[in-house]
Image (cartoon, rainbow, N blue to C red; front, side, top):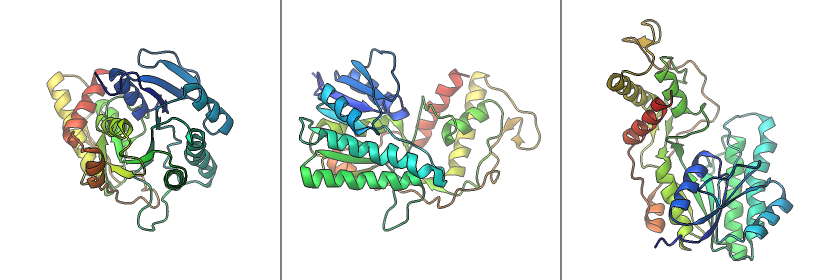
Length: 319
């Protein structure tokens, strides 16, 4: 029998990319999944009950926790954006820091045995300035999680997740779905120079890490990187995708071939590098996965090429 059988779990951000995959996994393990989003959702076979609550509201958050009485909490709800605009400071502060603090406050002193917060690879390291309002708010939430653990014994851990990709990404503007769908349509994706190095991690590997962190108390108090050992440039990632799309189109005879000309090679569209300006303070991303291996016994199981092939195949079937 699964150790999760009958465990009351609360998943915030359950309609998001990682959240939807996590909910399915937990349900398959036999957990009693309570999911929350800002708006009411239709019931699914994976969720025992959907709750509608704005976690930026401390009273609503406290009422949610009181109603569910969760044993394990996964906090993935987040205002995700890389926009560098002053107008994004307040929304990301409320959505990433305020919501996390409200949730941590609500579970303090209660029966919860594990709380797992989704952090970000974008959080600054070694005294760096945050690169965006999102990065600043995520870093602050990590600091508050550490405080709640140290002062009041809240069994909370933070998983600083790298750039997640895989089937079912709802945000079509993110790099992997954008490049994939553009190429499958025979359109040239417009990118930066592609020189930036980023750390990728497949969504099911991320779910593995969350399940391990929530399963016992060993992760409490830890901040762990969840990624892959070596970063890959955006250009190399896009070129790998282009090769996989070419293989997919050749194998299936599906897809739209672009006209030979500017931005195409052999009738197939290719990425256009330098068409978009790089964002300020975009830095190389790195993940130190050693602590996650020691604390959780976790390592990524999916290579970038294998994960991208599964992702392209998923999109190709739906186009």
